[in-house]
Length: 199
Length: 262
Image (spheres, rainbow over the protein chains, first blue to last red):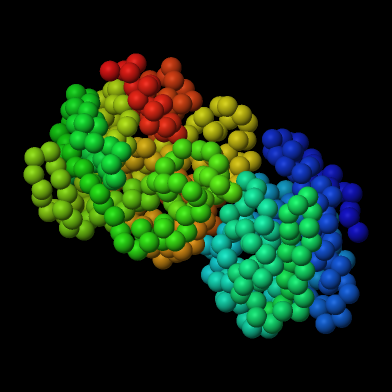
């Protein structure tokens, strides 16, 4: 599932062009990052009704986990959005090794301020970083009613986290989702992480 | 075509003494004719309400000093500190009462005029005519070269997604009337999102009007002054550009540093 060549290509890109990004690339490989991705992956794997063909991934970060997981789920079109140009460049290297299995597009965009230019015709929107951006409800309102959303957020103060939720209810309220399929809180190191799925 | 040198003041931190000191320095260091203007307590009710609504910190939303502010660091507090600077971009062509050194006048600046903005706490050390000779096809802004590999490689790139280390600094700006109106209009159209997301106006401009902006008309909106034109006391205290800036320093630190110069 996780192609070694993709990881090697990302590291080669970093070594040759962006050596100062190595620490934060390694951070993205941590167990906590993998478990955030596995959380939504496990849900979709078991949700008979959810078989998205196309997915928008907001604030994708290094997509070392999300690309192979979505490909394994049979997603045929993956759109990654991030406003960090170097992360986008590194994601191009990762995506190259999966392009025979899915069409992967990488967009250097701010999902909040460049929202008018985002393709809204996808089946699913995945955002595991709601805590770093404005309330999702406005972005949700721009999609068709039937689009599914998988959103994660947290109450953990951390550099760059500008949108903390006090609890799951407040996170769901900020999401703008009305028909909730599933919601859950997990606690780790004294902080809560939330996930809500719905439309 | 008139060369206009402008400053801005709001609240109670900067007094007439600060304004007069800056004017004296300008007068001694500008070899071309100019008019000096002070935007005094310029504000916008909608923007002010947006700051109050979205600021997540504990103290004064217009304080720029770093440090923890309850659960959030300053850059993560929202509130767009020093947003009033960006209001100038809506008032450089519109009729607005402004104060020159002797009287109130109502004026509409001509699109061919050139505007040089200076923070009240900068030091003018050399001839300001340099700024009026720059190519005026785009506005100009300070580049924080100390974030561009001077201190640490890749510092601004690594911290871009954390909204830190913007390599724009608005302590000195050059533009023609109307050139920066798109910045004002963008904020006005995205008021809640901007004031929620950005704690600092320089971070906002760097993200939405800088090298990585998505929309072509916003990307690379500014030219940046070459190295050495504006120097920073906090990062390069021994260098002396045309303008020496005290950005990022607290009022007490600035006053202490200024003793070396006066």
